[in-house]
Image (cartoon, rainbow, N blue to C red; front, side, top):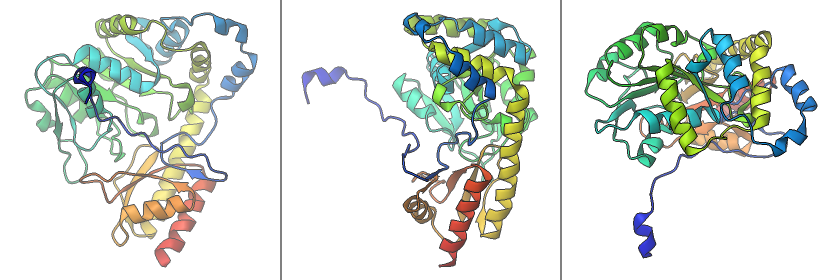
Length: 352
């Protein structure tokens, strides 16, 4: 090892879902929306003034911040926009989790949380979900330096009702509690109404799932003005120009078309519920997902074998060889046609 390596910050990186590029593949492994963005997004893309690309983008993302503030009926000073919700959460880890006490998050959860904690040298402790993949609020009454959890959870899809979420926030008034709502638009009630009661709450959402803009990398969080002010101080200390001009322009158009947004999520929810019934007929079991995916396992066939068989057929789902979840597959809800092909393949494969 070279002497210079002694000062290298070492970490085990997050492993993103595979991004294959195969003709006629069915991609159900990264929870992307199967439908295009709102029509206004495409219209704005065509009309975009590319000459403006030589200029720096608006550093405070003002047009998009104002559009989100109007949509959610909050002040612009309560909205923080980042390059995907990953960027938002990363900034929040850097800003708010600087104590000596461990932050808390579930043991089965979004696998970026422990990566950020390691990168920023934040002590952390995972809190086991119960046997039904649910959070026990009483487990979060232990001493901690902050809390984050997704709701609905990833990768299980389980949604915790708002009274449970509030119990965790109420029990931890001295630390920042982040509720990661990447999938809230597919079922359940957002924690946003709780912002009026709790100054330590930060609610994180994204354009990558329900707004069909994963490629644009737009995420945001909403909290009280003081929290957002601290976040902006850190962001402007790292990089003043984090979000590019096209993402800002197209993001505004996505927010404007609420009817299209709601119609798209309704289609995905309907497909999800239908596919749940089809998977049950094939012997799969799963929690009652309120996200845009289903976390399924089969009693007779190991998940790893099913995953590989699907992959060989150019049908991509997500599999983790980790404790507690190594016999489950996370299956993104695609179009009806895509899901029908998945079900047809599984029928034939399980009949062999």
